[in-house]
Image (cartoon, rainbow, N blue to C red):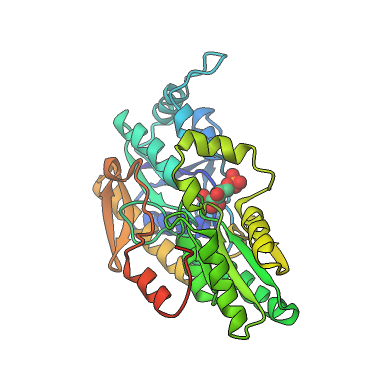
Length: 356
Ligand code: F6P
């Protein structure tokens, strides 16, 4: 059995833990397993850049963040675009798969990577994929690996801001990753007692945000903390077409949405504002215990799928049970925070403002 393995897209803390799960379960339950690790994601598959892995490669990596085989972003929308030099990426990947006599390919990736995984499935390759992303935005699974580790880091960042915000009596904005969705901001914000949480799924009204800050001031609270998703959007901007919004963002005189929100709050309240962006620290460091367990379960299931020859699916988790989801169902769909979900009601019930 020859199994190809690759990690694609933005990294996260639990990629190695997941690969370890796959490898250990394969070595323990099947004879004559050889794992080929493609370097830097789909790029390695395209250019036949790989390493024959040994069992020892998967030892001691449970707690190690990043990925031992490297990763890169290879946009899905360019997959079928032939390069100026005539390079056909899809054909190249298929050629590598066939030349190396692979029985299947295990892909660890987020949204774009799952779309490419589905494309390769359509092209006839045997694919098993695993849901990686700190954004937790993959459709079909309650949880992605990397998410909880990132929640820990973003929460710690907001915890640290709490003490300094309280000392100085300032309004602080902590900008949280998550791309187009607000899962990470919502969970980190709630976990660390943010007063205002702004998510892409709930466009904000700046006057409501200001009102929430002023209410706190009137109550004698000297500081306010906002957890703002990097994709947060105002009610006015949410009315724009995608194209118009993109054009507006391109000319925005601020490095990110948080600075714009900060400026508007400062103008309206006269309060002192600070912006903190933990950025890529949210993807770094060691996976948290929850992710280590989740990754091990995901990896172990992937090995069972390989043993059974059950391909074309992504491993996921629903109601704490591991499930297999057809890739064609996953590809191209985002799992977003539902503004009407109970978690939003619960957060609002304790006084958190979403600026809506
Ligand atoms: O998808 C993970 C993620 O960290 C997003 O939250 C963020 O928007 C993006 O990747 C950052 O990408 P890059 O590492 O390419 O800057």
